[in-house]
Image (tube, rainbow, N blue to C red; front, side, top):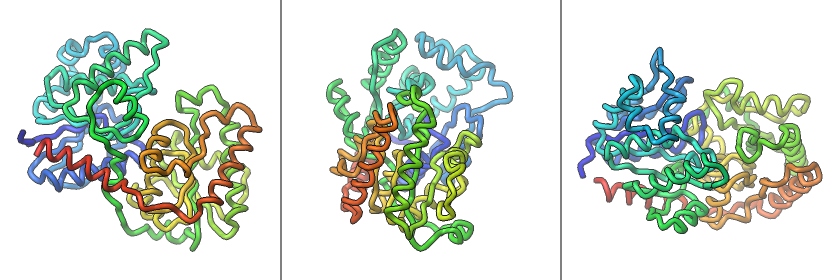
Length: 406
């Protein structure tokens, strides 16, 4: 088929990791399909978060799909999806109807790389934008995603699972970025291309701004906590006990690396008070240590990867903090909070470099024990590991995509 126009949908925003995957994919598409127009549709982007992600190229068009009066487009998009009324809704609703020209013009609709929107988070809007492509009979690529798990406890669970499985069998191209999702796909008899996080397509290197350079010590470790209470699996825990874990771990790391600065890199962006920068500041409230520096959250994923490249160690409870470490061959410890981290490390034979924190927040004893595991792990593996085939896997997936559509 001839690809004159690609429409990218479901681009996760507000996260430096998703930004890195977006940049790597779009830059690769621009090189592989030099005559193809690429439209990135950022649906109801109230925060104008797309500005952080833009890849400048004459073929790229970023559309902030947002209007002065959205006439209840959200939550109606989710309502229509739950009740099987998407075909009706996109033709009746005056705002949702404006999506149709973008889809109709596209030769291929590509769902951007990302996490478990079609699974644990049960993101109905995510399904809605996929359903529009299916209703219009457009080829649909689900690129380098994780999905699942699919609980069946409630009617809503079962409904979501049914619709998600229907989409999985509709996709024209499906690539999966972690081992656990691949096992799920195998059990469902879904064909796919083995992949990995799209950020591994490239290793960006840029100049670090002087404002950061002036703050950096010669030796530093990167520490990236995750508040976790936003996640469906951790809402039952108090923020205090999660924060306690990070403070104890940072103190232990400072003791293990007394000559190193601790650098904290916010992964969330464009979120204001809800972002990592504010969370890190609250976390460190009352923790007096001049050798801890929180990098402002305005710097791109390319800059973050360049900073990580020269770190002694990365300790991260966010998926892409570990992706960045592996991509730049830096020793790391992954604080595993959901299957996408475990699946990534399993695929690369790096499972020894993680400590599982999924069940530690029930009491302080488990928290303290996990801190000890972390320090033992770091002490055992501080020489690095790193001749992985992550870049080869990422390029192999992209080449399979190119071979199918070029």
